Amino acid sequence: MVIKKSQLYSSLRAICDELQLSINYYFVGFMQTKAVVIDIERTDR
Image (cartoon, rainbow, N blue to C red; front, side, top):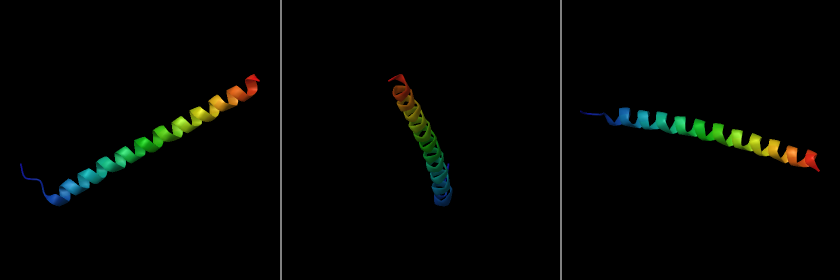
C-alpha cells in the first residue's frame, strides 16, 4: 500500500482538526459546568 505524502499530511491535518474541535468542545462544556457549580455555591449561602 503506497500512500502519497500529500495524502498523509491531509489526513493528519483532518485528525488534528477533529481533535482540536473536540478539545474545544469539552473545554467549553467544562467551563460552563464550573460556572454553574459556582452559581449554585453562591445561592446556597
